[in-house]
Length: 99
Image (tube, rainbow, N blue to C red; front, top):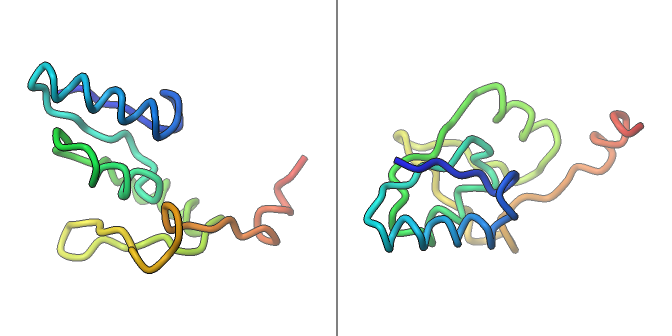
């Protein structure tokens, strides 16, 4: 099992490059946390078997982003009615944490 994270490996493009390597070498792939970001990209990666889901990370995602989808019966499904990856920064809520 190879684990990758779009926030640490070159964004969505880097994630998909790792997914292509996993497919070429018949390795399963796991997405490392950030479920609001990874839910969409995991749908495009054939080798994905897991998406880590930590409640503390999700709590932070919900604080800063609109469009964070909850799991239903243990599955995350992207909201296809929203543009892009489905989330939008809550500018006012995030602003109070700006340096």
